[in-house]
Image (cartoon, rainbow, N blue to C red; front, side):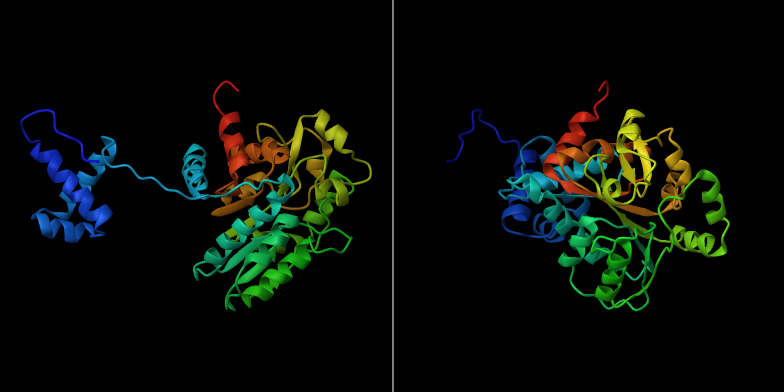
Length: 325
């Protein structure tokens, strides 16, 4: 229904701006076409549309299940100065969150790995990364190398880094290589022996040279690391007692993103947090209420450039990371 004007005069400036908005948003004209129609410069059209949005005259309404996700992507990326946030809708059934986050990661990796500028890509292990390969379309990137970035576990499974690295490389028709080491050494001293080996040093140098890598994470109660990779002389309970909330490729972090003061962190054979900060694009894919503390810790540690998560997790991260909390 048309609104009636209350004063006997015309605001020519607002009228022009509204005409521009109608031309661009309803008729579908480009800004260049609208400029030509009204005898304006393209810059004037651009500034006019921006002014309409600032004044609340021009508003965008998006009626889609993905609308909240799109808004959260901007908020999360802005809050932690990320390169990108990928937020997927949360499922009605909490147990399905991993599948949806994996789908979001798969779509993101499909676009990322199609970029010829990415010639070496790192892949960690875990159920989220395993499922992500199921949501990717095949690529032809014989110039690309996929490298595993985390030590392996003895038990063979689909979520082991070796299997995931091989599957992603096959999907991309790419080369691949493995980081052939356990996740943890028996002691800090034996770790030094491992790290001095040429094969380990060379493999870590290769991993540090990745343009991007994908990581998953878990808490200290139900994660694969706790189930399959913790040394027998370490319990999750003692890590939690020291403030541990989860791990990032084997580094046990507290709520503020600092390594906990436990000998296990000195036994890690792999990348340090400082190493991760030097990688141009570290992609962390994780979702679920139980992972909020470790995701937040990784964000606070400054080791994440791209976050892939779900709406509920993103909302919790934003709510719980306000000043004073």
